[in-house]
Length: 587
Image (tube, rainbow, N blue to C red; front, top):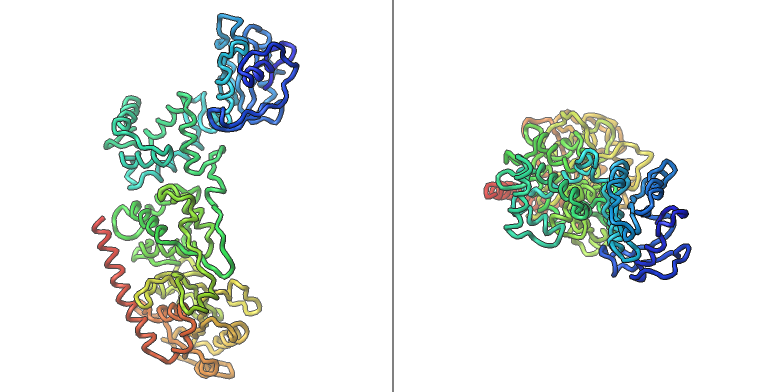
């Protein structure tokens, strides 16, 4: 609380009157620091009254003293000296005059953006004393500055940006309007209470009376939504807009908080992260609301629309070569879910951030996005129990340069090697014994001298060599003997480019002899140089080995083991797509 000492404007009297609820007979020269407990304040926030380091400053002047009023805005006055802190102008001693000082004060208030409000009061008869400190609390908790520009009488760009995201997240069917159900969900989410039907109509009627395009098809448009918040602020109900902003994760600077975007998620060693069932349902609903033409794929325009609630475009052109696309190169429904699965597996913090932008915790009424994540149990426990509940399995693909690794990845997505933007990952679904699983292929750069733990940490390994290059297999043999010979990780040798003439490899053992010696499955022939879509049988085998590493060696020569898995994959792949199309037709 600041004021001119010589003018005796009544700073200490105001504080003493607030605390004791009566005017003091004897006023000390200066009040000590005082704490007002939360339970006696309207905003339920404890308030410390002190002389420095404040969150809000009350500049007190005496309404019966013109000089003290003039000193408020004088070049050496407090208004000029204080910056970046909300200010309240307080006209004390209103009991001594019959006129108001507001005519003089309002021009000062309009001149300085930091001034939140002005109030006249009297410490002697307790007029507006509690209101004064309520406004002070409100200036801190619900400041005008970040939201609204008084000179232009409109919302600031950062506020419009935040409210636009909130509108799009709340527009569950993406039709550009908030219908009654969406408005009620929004109201319940932010204020824990629905609106009565008449109240909804009253809100829309207010908008109709003030603008032509604020209501469409009996729903609230973005323009109408922004107008309502402008109206709230103009009528002094800043807390309404701030309640909405904070419920959707924004801080005082209208940035999404770190706590909102990155909730705490503990991941023990040797555990992986996956999306759970509710997360996939949410992501399916997000896909559906943006797949306007119902072609089960997202066009570039639809992808752009989906990510409008993000501050940046999270998916680059490499994504189209990481997941399945249609003939036009657009990301399919399966590819879309696969990319989310990949992000969650490789970088769960980024996945939490993305889910935060989409409003997962708000739409699904969860405490945070962490509720969308399943942390799998330690892989060693899976090996001990010889079973797993995991849904995502990683296959690292190693081989010398130009051995066919990239072609192996792209064939998994049903295409040949002719791609514009190289990706070191490919992910899609396979079916093992009727269970849908994700297989994540990762092409490891061929640097034999250094393979990091990340290069080695996986569920199954593919060692790829070019049958037409006599020096290609040597790399696979050395990598296996250096890193995997004593590992429990299953390994498969891939004889790539099998459509070409097979030459003798410059190694002491032929690939077949090497596999026989080390009890590996014989080299698997593979080519992506064909007019037909590549077979997924090999990828199903890899997934099966990743799921059942203890069976991979025991059933190496048991053809029925692979046959059961492959047949299951074919049947469920067809059924899975048919079921999705049927669900789409129902919607």
